Image 1 (tube, rainbow, N blue to C red):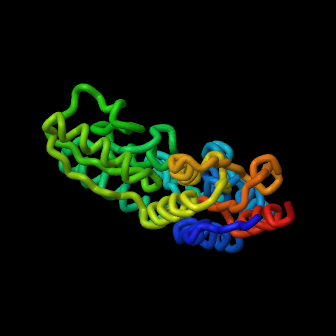
Image 2: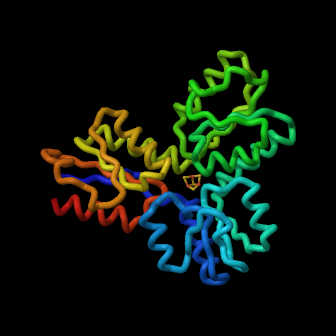
Image 3: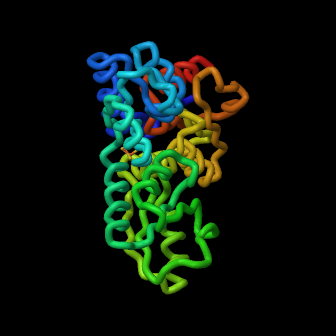
Length: 276
Ligand code: F3S
């Protein structure tokens, strides 16, 4: 059985940068905690705990004088204001590309422009962008979710890990309603590269394995891109989750990994596949 790894897979620059910033904070200003997971990969978050980086779900859990690290996918501004009021040290590990979405949302708010955020309304990144956009904004996971009542002009921002197809379908639905668009394609390059490389590889193998957090938006999109080619696709978090039945009779197996999947998790998966 031949095992092939996608040309672009695994950690993106925003995730690498967030881990470097957070570990530096844990070393220099302990105790340090991230507000929610630093990245959407439970195995790496667990490893980071061993390096002194805790995780809290609410600011009320933070001991006085502690350091709070803002995760790579950002946070709504109200949480940052509250942390400042509590006198906590804040270290911002938000990916610069997510920050760009937040700045665009603020720009819309200042200009009184209504914002449509294309993405998962429950995802922290999207909640953060909405927080910066203010009350004149809505998040939609797809064109079907667009509200019936919208202004004649809207600004469109996309969650960084969505697909170009989804953004295009929402933009087309708005245009059909004669709504003028200020369209920002904020899908990040790392995401687009990983999706294209995953689909290319899925097209030439018998089975695809996508490794990464089940809570990771970009990893789920990769699995969708692979499954969309018609090739049987399995999304796993770890090598242990690989059932030999997945690759039974496969001559070629393709592997890809989300932007938040560390190299050591990918390596363990490749080793297990080679041993089967
Ligand atoms: Fe940033 Fe894109 Fe990674 S938005 S965190 S570089 S997936």
